[in-house]
Every structure is written in C-alpha cells, then in structure tokens.
Length: 437
Image 1: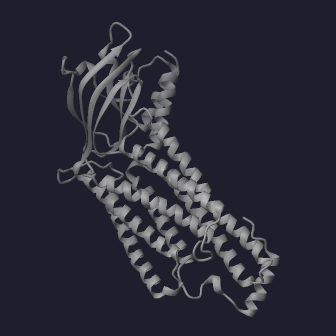
Image 2 (image 1 turned 60 degrees about the vertical axis):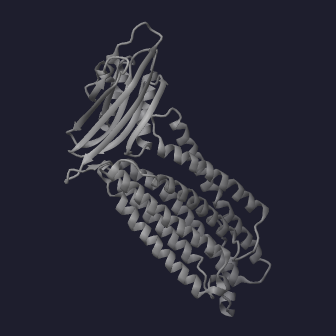
C-alpha cells in the first residue's frame, strides 16, 4: 500500500471541519465502494448517548482469493483522537485504523450473521461525553463493499425520551422559532411604514416585503424541521418546505441587494444592460448553489461526490458575493460623474453617502456570515455549536434592519434634501472628498 490512506484520512479531517454535526435516523445503501474510510455521522453525545447500527445485505468483492472480515468494521473517533490516528498512519502507511488504540471499536464483519443474510444490529452506549464521528474502515486490500446501513444516533433526555439532535444543536428549534417571530414582527412594521408613506413606496419596497416574508417562513420551517428531527429522528417533510423557502429567500436577497445597488425603481425605472447581466449571472448561480445545498444537507460524506458538491457550493457562493458588489460600485461611480454636471450637489452628496454606506454594510455582512460564522463553527466546543447559528441570525437581522432603514419609503429622505446652505456645503464636500472605495 502507499500513502493514499493517510491522504484520505487527512481529507476526512477536513470533512469534519466542513461537515456540521448531523442527526436524524438515516438509511442508506453503499454499492461497490472501495474507499478505505467512510464518514457516516458526526454527533455530540452526552453521558446518555447511544449509537444504533444495523447493516444488512453485506457483500465484499476482492481481487484476492480471501478477505479477512476483521479488517472491515465500524468505529467511533473523536476529533482529539483523530490527530493521533493521523500520526500513526503517517508513521506506518500500511497501518489499519481498526488496530488503533485511540478509536472506540463497535464491530467488524466478523460479527455478521452467516450468509445469505450477512447482517448485524446492535446498540452501543457512549459513556464518555464528547463529539464523535462514526466511521467505516476497509483495511482489506483491493476490496470493495456493498451493504445497506441504518444509523440511529441520539441522547436520552431526563424524561427518558430520545433526542436525535446533537448536544450542541438541541436548542436550534427554539432559536429558529424566536427569530421567525422577530421577522414576522419586522414584516408587520414594514407594511405599516409602507402604508403610512404610500406616495413614496416603490416596487423595490414590495420586493423587500417579500424578502422578509420568505425569511420568516424559512425560519419557521427550519424550526419545525429541527423539532421533528429532535423528537422523531425524521423531518416529516418539513425539510422540503425548508429548502423551497430557502431557495426563494436567497434568490430574493441577492436580487434585492443588486436592485438596490443599481438604484432601480427609486432612482431610475429601468436597468442597464450590464446590470441585467449581473442578475442573469447571479440567479442561475443561486439555483446551482441551492441544489448543492440540498445535496450536502440531505446526504453526507458517505456519498462519493460530497466533497465536490461542497466545492461547488463554496465557489458559487463566492462568485455571487463578488457579483452583487459591482452594481453598488457602478452606482457610486455614476453618481460621482453626474455630480460634476447636473448642479444638484446636495442630492448627489446624499446619494453618494448612502450608497457608500450601503457598500460597507454589504461587505460587513458578507464577511461576518461567510468568515466569522465559519470560524465560530470551527472553534466552538461541541456543546455550543448553536452559538454560530445564533451569531449568523443576529447578523442577518441587523443587516436587514440597517438595509431596510437606509432605503425605507419616506416623503423626505436623503434623496430629496434641497436647501441653499446645504447645497453650497455639498458642493464643497464633493470637490474636497473623492468617494473612492
């Protein structure tokens, strides 16, 4: 054997960093899989944790005449122990992870019932609270495995009921529900603002209201999804609604940011060709990103193309985040050029200031939700994984509030400041300050 197992195990470490703690009762089929290691679950256990594994229809195909069944099996591995296992394999490329003293053995294929059933079903208590990953290891050379696997990972609550959410995610249903209520209240207040300022309402404000509605519905579906997973181990169809509203919400969010950045409907009634092209790029890319999100969320590292789907999602998300910045930059440059010729210094200064602030707000939001939240998710202890979700929702709510306040429908807003003294001061400001990014 070569150093390939070490590289694959190192890749597994990266997967553990990318793959959020999962849950649910999962049933899946492995077909002719020759990978030396397969990651099935990552879960935070309390002192009442249990793992139930059922395998059936097991078959091993090998280019060699005989395969040792003790070289194939399931085990649990904590992130702390993973580093030790990596060192063991680095020192000896032919080392089998099933021989490591740092893993928690569950069972090997030697424990299977005899053919033709070739099955096994057992529940294991987890006595040491920690975050563990459930792996399958294949140390048999030149062999591939086919089997049906059912995993059930949970903690017992004080009342004896099963909690299928990880120790750090058991509060997510309440968290998402509270934020959904906040967005419904936000929507009601926004409708009131639009109703009391009818003459200043533009089409963009209606789109912004739709965005709030989709965000609230997305969160309520997320709360129900996590609640049913927590109680029963399955989402009962709420995951479908969650992905539908998430798709609409994300597309609306990027569209609203792009349209506000262009000044559509409140500064001009049309879009330029280059602005239309941005939308034509962002929307299809968001369709692809949401497809990748569904694959990532509904499957896991046990599928062979899971890493590829993660790379697609990250790449598309980066492209979209960059693309939505261009219309804001174009609007700032256009306003700077216009301010030199139209003689409306106060208006142009207000518009430039507003768009420059909006540019900074968007950059800050993207930076926080893409980098800071990921850092929190990576460094937080497994019992506090909900903190990254809370931080992301707080940041999103603050971003929505600031964006909606900046572009609210009011009779006398920053666009219509017309005063002689302010006009002179604005002309001086436009001459003295360059609105560079």
